[in-house]
Each structure stands twice: as structure tokens, then as C-alpha cells.
Amino acid sequence: MWLKIIILILFAGVLLSLTAGLNFLLRDAGGSHKKRTLYALGIRITLATLMMACVIYGFYSGILTNTAPWDQRLP
Image (tube, rainbow, N blue to C red; front, side, top):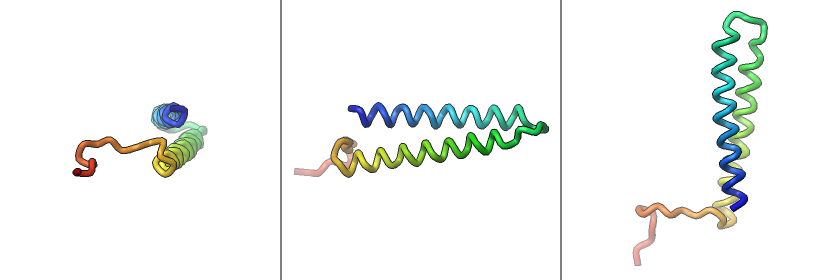
């Protein structure tokens, strides 16, 4: 259960970083703060990497499972 909460928090962080990056890109078009967009990209990449690591760990440890109907084994 905790792993799912961590994954959701990381996903929300990725979305917030994406929104902040777009905001910085549009607001700082001619300004001197052009590195804010780059920093938002770095944060987004870091959060996405952590999220993927959590998902891989969850599948490897068996905490997360696949329940898609097309991926079920036939009896």
C-alpha cells in the first residue's frame, strides 16, 4: 500500500514539475532566468526515474501485480 502512495506522490511531483517548467518557459521568454526551465526539467527527470525504480521494484518484489484481463493465464 505504501508503495502505491509513493508512486502517486512521485507522479504528482512530475506533473507539478511539468507545469512549473511550462510556466517558466512562457514567463521567462526574454528574461535572465532561463535556467529555471532547465532546473524544472532536471527535477522532472529525477522524479520520473525514481517513479520507474519504484514500479520496477514493486513488480520484482510482488507488491504490484498485473490484473489486466488480456494478460491472464488460461486454465
